[in-house]
Image (cartoon, rainbow, N blue to C red):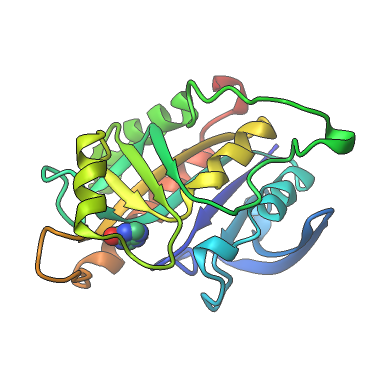
Length: 244
Ligand code: HPA
């Protein structure tokens, strides 16, 4: 079987991996992604906002994306998310292997079970992210000099606007750790397709209300995301689907 990596803001290619463009047709639309070469031809990379970051989070064709991975025979995916920090103990440049989410998105095509020929199904969200793949990732993190918080609650906001301080205060009370705009419905659709899916948030700012205005971190970000991608590749190369 094959593996996939999905990334968005701040990650547009995988360092040190030769990849070729590939187009996949799905019932939900065409998907442009990248395929590794040689021994890595079972590895696919998808920049979820497009290679030129032209697609905002609320317009990403999540259903086509995950379906394309299924068409390619992908059974495990690691996803990276640029996030804001809600939890005061998670400063910018922290990494969090998220294990749960609170969904504040709206108006997105977020299921394959939309009636009609697919029928009705209510996918179990007791474990929204694949624990075995998360564990595998955490185990290898020290090899890449990375410290990853082993769990965290991802708040999915619809965007494209950022949140207000009152919204962030509410999410804090509700137990949110980080906030981003893309993990939902991405992880839900993976679950519907029975693809083992784990995600890591890398914080690029304190969320609204921590400071007078939102400031994005720049220093150290490229180095951090490069090591995160190297960790993703090492984890995917050395894990098997039957761990889930
Ligand atoms: N809010 C929502 N999404 C984000 C943020 C944020 O503060 N930072 C990065 N993605």
